[in-house]
Length: 229
Image (tube, rainbow, N blue to C red; front, side, top):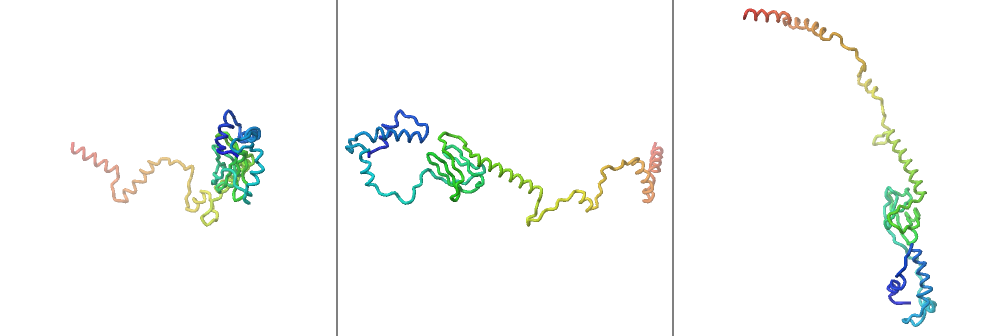
């Protein structure tokens, strides 16, 4: 009905107003349009906009058969923390879809996520900053998945398998001692008189080898020293 309506709104509607949310903005705008903008006579059209609604509607063409997409869409691969970020705020998504691509649409009132046409998250949009919005059902599902993962990991550590899939046999260490004939005595008996036994056993070995006894050698050495003196 008017030219440069954005400028008209900026100069006639926005000054001096405060808005708590997009819904509050729309409520105040609807009231201003009905009470002020569309009810006053405008010089450009020589009439009130409210009086020309029927004429303007009759001149419009039909809407397209496909509903237009409303909101800001984007696609992202869901990370391990199962959250998606919209305007600095994080919204939870069903953790069963971690690792898959999800489509997120942010409208003024909702944040909706889907995967291959299946709805997996629906939150009321938060217009503050740096907040985390979590669905209690998503938190409960994540707790169950973490518990199942921990059980699978414990089972894998307890049962090792070869590359072909069959289970690795885990044997006790004494079985390998028996296999190789190793006998480890944890409490050996102390060797009493070991030095004396070694000296006693050494004498026959020296005679068998044709070597003089150590005592004989010492006597000969002492005699040589006496002669030299």
